[in-house]
Length: 239
Image 1 (cartoon, rainbow, N blue to C red):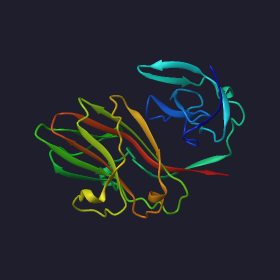
Image 2 (image 1 turned 180 degrees about the vertical axis):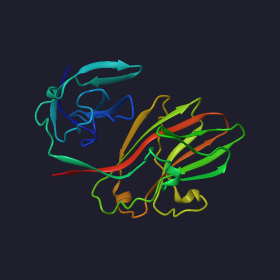
Image 3 (image 1 turned 135 degrees about the vertical axis):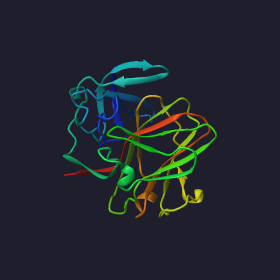
């Protein structure tokens, strides 16, 4: 199909992250409606950044379960401007799985039940125990005031039921016991059974914080599993 006068909802992000089987990015049409653009991590242009601006595009239209989606064959199927300005990704904070994050700035606060654990080189994981669990995996503090824009991205997977799990942010937490009034939900509603990437542009409120943290809260009373295989806060600098 040929679509005209569209643009990427999240320009400047990679077409696909190498840590997941594929990455979805939304294409926004002239009337404001949207459709998913799915890109495999094996695509030859997967590591390139999605362009800014409006363009026409030729793509394959398909349906996965209940979701309509487009698949791009070649970058040349995107009309000018297909080459964005020279861009450099600056990673402000990331989950480094080459070493134990819990020994490198990340914190596990277990109120009850199971705790988050390190799977070397693979993921952070929590496996719930019957009878109740409340465990928070908290990122290091991030000074967001030096940046005009930041994007949060993470890749996660949920097995054997979703229970209650959520991603929070705080601009006031400095350590110690959890006070839920300091934490605000990002309202993540999708907890897929396969590793899936999530992306969100941070609001001006969060960019004004010199003490921004994110937390992954597992709150469940059954034996289910949640895994986090990638996390980063980054920005794109144009040159």
